[in-house]
Image (cartoon, rainbow, N blue to C red; front, side, top):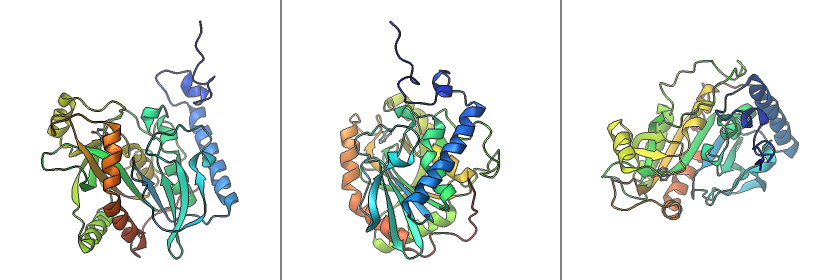
Length: 313
Ligand code: HPA
């Protein structure tokens, strides 16, 4: 019996499905460009203003951030491929207007490569936000703590990242207007925005650590030996998201800030195992602090820097 291919099932681009190693062909990259141009048109058809900031929430972290303009839209309406929803990720899009003249594209939930999306699909919404004009990206994620002094519920500002997913959304010949072929990654997370976040957290009395985030492919959680390796290599927390999105955003000149919520201690650091339910539960417990910090950041006049560049579709 022949099983249907992924392309026949309609899940992924046939260029990708026909190649188990997921090579990025020129036609894949061309179709990414066309699909993004169409998504920009779809956005403009909604009549929503173009965003200056985008915010992406992680597992169980889709906090309420004020009055959305218009109705909440399913993320799928903006995407040229089907989406699979996983628990804790509503996959909704809101447009927030927390500051006059600074609309915020709020992506409640994200796509992960472990769901079967290739790197270009995983970062599609980030590229869409950048093409619409967003110059600042804020992300949250749930992460496993790799240090004994961390506790579930801790908020940690990501200072740097280690991309261990084996993927990179810049593979293939991307339009030169989007960004350089070999982007500098000296400052994946903006020092300016980290200073702003720390100042804001101090004012709110919210403890905020800093650390290096290791991004793994998942979806299995790490073994104790993998955790020991990550710790030895300088990581402070581990998760299954964020790194590809940051690479795509930096490529397009977007200034990035990201916050991890420690939802569990990784095996070998804490005593027990890890479960998705525990991750969601601990994420929800941190919601109030996260919401307070994000709301204050979104309302801060200096959130959007003056030297951000704009790219076109
Ligand atoms: N490992 C990987 N991803 C995660 C974890 C973890 O321990 N916790 C939340 N996301």
